[in-house]
Image 1: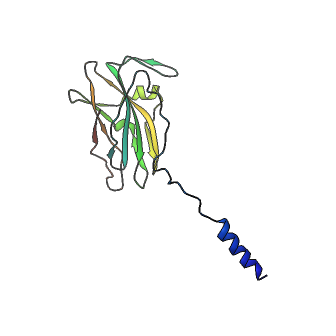
Image 2: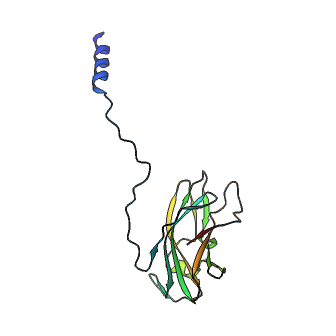
Length: 173
């Protein structure tokens, strides 16, 4: 029985050499995706509002109509679609409301997202954005034909330190 500890110690010393290690990646490697035909890819730095980070990745303006699984709808002016990724960087969940996101046009007018367009395209209205959760979706607005989208006024949602989330963050397009 006295031999067993010596054998175990020898096995541990000879068989447990540390393999050369490669550092773990520090970023996720997400595969690139094609930009939709009517869309322009945006290369903007991420912006934050409260505990929510906004990554605007695609913009389509001047859309003459939208089509869903059961309806086609014409705008009063033109549809604008913004593809974005929101990420909760805080420690608590955030109630994210897509209806609060405002599009500012080249004349300074603000436009709320178009509820019917969002419904037809089956985009979320409001959702719980948990800690570390990342969600990608589209926002739609119906703005006058002679206007250009300039800025997204983004609202991340209430946080522990800002329960009302009154002030948005302007993100130039």
